[in-house]
Length: 74
Image 1 (cartoon, rainbow, N blue to C red):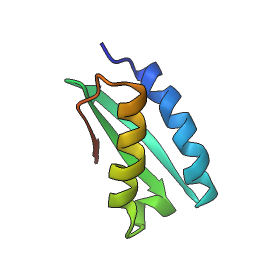
Image 2 (image 1 turned 90 degrees about the vertical axis):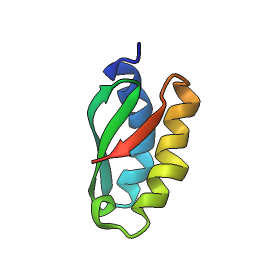
Image 3 (image 1 turned 45 degrees about the vertical axis):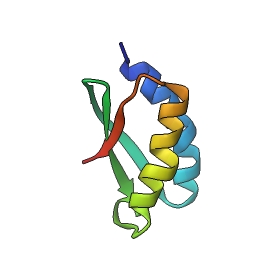
Image 4 (image 1 turned 30 degrees about the vertical axis):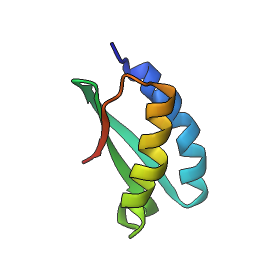
């Protein structure tokens, strides 16, 4: 079972990069092996946020926690 603590640990690594761009990420919930997050700050309105989610956030979380099926932005 995927825990919030596991996901937060990976998000802490991702946050370092997002904060350099004036953004952040919030974990909303983990349900049915899907991680729900919200991009905040500059990342919430950035036109590249979709690419950031798929190419960086989702790939990093899936690499570190293989049980994750998907990462969804809310």
